[in-house]
Image 1 (cartoon, rainbow, N blue to C red):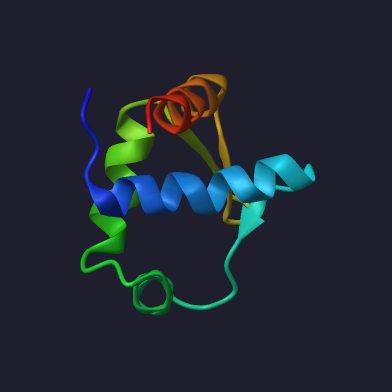
Image 2 (spheres, one colour; image 1 turned 90 degrees about the vertical axis):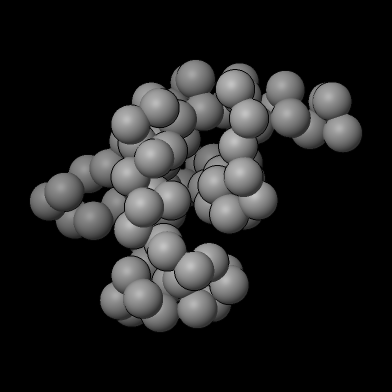
Length: 81
């Protein structure tokens, strides 16, 4: 399954939180998140990763984390690079 650069960037961002043992949260708007990470359509990127089962989203406190599948896929990408 090929991911585009925006999806990989978000996976990397979430993976860094995972390595620290934290869940990711963003205090700004989704548009600001896109600007910070230089992603043109952040909502679609996040939704696509969610639909693929790579991330989970806690809607009560708006945090996101990588799923086991997301961690495995990201680590596979790192090994293949």
